[in-house]
Length: 95
Image 1 (tube, one colour):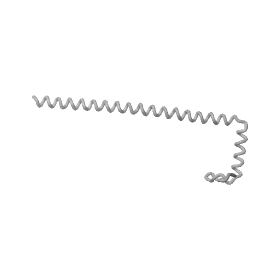
Image 2 (cartoon, one colour; image 1 turned 180 degrees about the vertical axis):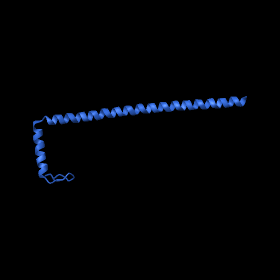
Image 3 (cartoon, helix red, strand yellow; image 1 turned 30 degrees about the vertical axis):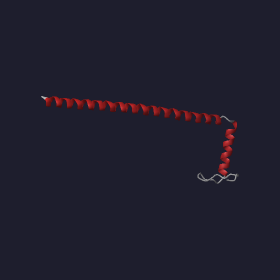
Image 4 (cartoon, rainbow, N blue to C red; image 1 turned 60 degrees about the vertical axis):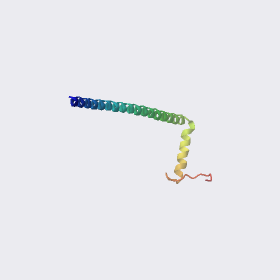
Protein backbone atom coordinates (compact mmCIF):
# COMPACT_ATOMS: atom_id res chain seq x y z
CA UNK A 1 0.00 0.00 0.00
CA UNK A 2 2.78 2.40 0.98
CA UNK A 3 4.68 1.43 -2.16
CA UNK A 4 1.64 2.25 -4.30
CA UNK A 5 1.34 5.70 -2.68
CA UNK A 6 5.06 6.39 -3.23
CA UNK A 7 4.88 5.33 -6.86
CA UNK A 8 1.79 7.46 -7.51
CA UNK A 9 3.40 10.48 -5.81
CA UNK A 10 6.55 9.99 -7.87
CA UNK A 11 4.58 9.74 -11.11
CA UNK A 12 2.49 12.80 -10.28
CA UNK A 13 5.65 14.74 -9.32
CA UNK A 14 7.27 13.84 -12.63
CA UNK A 15 4.14 14.94 -14.50
CA UNK A 16 4.12 18.28 -12.67
CA UNK A 17 7.84 18.80 -13.37
CA UNK A 18 7.38 18.00 -17.05
CA UNK A 19 4.35 20.30 -17.38
CA UNK A 20 6.03 23.21 -15.60
CA UNK A 21 9.24 22.89 -17.62
CA UNK A 22 7.21 22.73 -20.82
CA UNK A 23 5.31 25.86 -19.81
CA UNK A 24 8.56 27.65 -18.87
CA UNK A 25 10.08 26.74 -22.24
CA UNK A 26 7.00 28.07 -24.04
CA UNK A 27 7.14 31.34 -22.09
CA UNK A 28 10.85 31.77 -22.85
CA UNK A 29 10.30 31.15 -26.55
CA UNK A 30 7.46 33.70 -26.61
CA UNK A 31 9.59 36.32 -24.78
CA UNK A 32 12.51 35.78 -27.16
CA UNK A 33 10.17 36.06 -30.14
CA UNK A 34 8.83 39.36 -28.80
CA UNK A 35 12.37 40.71 -28.32
CA UNK A 36 13.37 39.67 -31.83
CA UNK A 37 10.22 41.24 -33.25
CA UNK A 38 10.95 44.55 -31.50
CA UNK A 39 14.57 44.46 -32.73
CA UNK A 40 13.40 43.77 -36.28
CA UNK A 41 10.90 46.62 -36.16
CA UNK A 42 13.52 49.03 -34.81
CA UNK A 43 15.97 48.07 -37.54
CA UNK A 44 13.28 48.48 -40.18
CA UNK A 45 12.43 51.94 -38.82
CA UNK A 46 16.07 53.08 -38.84
CA UNK A 47 16.69 51.70 -42.33
CA UNK A 48 13.54 53.33 -43.71
CA UNK A 49 14.53 56.63 -42.10
CA UNK A 50 18.09 56.36 -43.45
CA UNK A 51 16.93 55.71 -47.01
CA UNK A 52 14.27 58.39 -46.75
CA UNK A 53 16.92 60.91 -45.67
CA UNK A 54 19.20 59.82 -48.52
CA UNK A 55 16.36 60.14 -51.01
CA UNK A 56 15.54 63.62 -49.71
CA UNK A 57 19.18 64.64 -50.10
CA UNK A 58 19.30 63.32 -53.65
CA UNK A 59 16.09 65.10 -54.53
CA UNK A 60 17.42 68.34 -53.08
CA UNK A 61 20.61 67.99 -55.14
CA UNK A 62 18.73 67.14 -58.31
CA UNK A 63 16.76 70.39 -58.05
CA UNK A 64 19.86 72.54 -58.06
CA UNK A 65 20.46 74.28 -61.37
CA UNK A 66 24.18 73.78 -61.06
CA UNK A 67 23.91 70.09 -60.21
CA UNK A 68 23.70 68.86 -63.79
CA UNK A 69 26.53 71.13 -64.86
CA UNK A 70 28.67 69.96 -61.95
CA UNK A 71 28.04 66.30 -62.75
CA UNK A 72 28.83 66.91 -66.39
CA UNK A 73 32.09 68.68 -65.52
CA UNK A 74 33.11 65.97 -63.07
CA UNK A 75 32.45 63.26 -65.63
CA UNK A 76 34.47 65.21 -68.20
CA UNK A 77 37.46 65.49 -65.83
CA UNK A 78 37.17 61.83 -64.85
CA UNK A 79 37.08 60.65 -68.46
CA UNK A 80 40.10 62.81 -69.39
CA UNK A 81 42.15 61.48 -66.50
CA UNK A 82 43.73 58.08 -66.67
CA UNK A 83 42.74 57.07 -63.18
CA UNK A 84 41.46 53.55 -62.67
CA UNK A 85 38.72 52.56 -60.26
CA UNK A 86 41.20 51.43 -57.60
CA UNK A 87 43.83 54.16 -58.19
CA UNK A 88 44.41 57.19 -55.99
CA UNK A 89 42.92 60.25 -57.63
CA UNK A 90 45.63 62.89 -58.25
CA UNK A 91 45.27 66.28 -56.60
CA UNK A 92 47.23 69.51 -56.67
CA UNK A 93 47.58 69.45 -52.90
CA UNK A 94 50.67 67.86 -51.36
CA UNK A 95 49.94 64.77 -49.30
